[in-house]
Length: 212
Image (cartoon, rainbow, N blue to C red):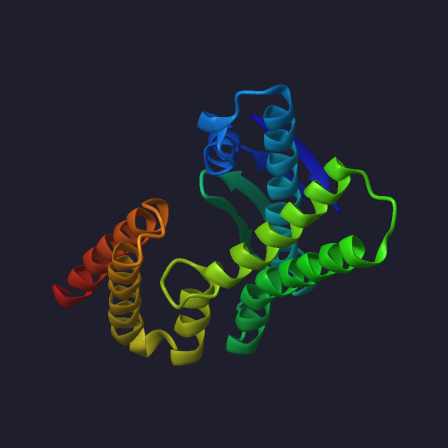
């Protein structure tokens, strides 16, 4: 496990974070020295992008007086915050939205750099292209309205705690639709497996509410 501090925010990077990035980056297909180096560049781009995403959450929460820490784990990470009094619904919305917002800005900045800067080495161009792709794709996926992703948490914040049942029902429906579309259009197994797990977890949460 790697630990460090950034902007006085503790950051922990768990081993599964690197393994997940390596798997997504194609570690099973990396045979040559060039492919292995490109895999490492992809993992670095993923690390920077996801860390920036979580910093968006953490710095915004810190601005509102919260104690924060960042944990990078398998399939992403999270920014945990506590203390500092009760947040308004608008403050909660800002904290959640800050992550994908700053990540999209990072992706756009990387794209502009690739387009505008001449003389980038092939590996340098590869890195910034991957940084752009990871940032924008990750941010967009995170905005899907399925708990516990940012889109689901934004939906939960907008609907309010009294409509948690509706939030869970929407999360389940959206996740199931994505699973079906992923299988129909054959876009790989990682996304449908991930969405299937979230649909199941939201279903369990919905059942626990029904039993109360």
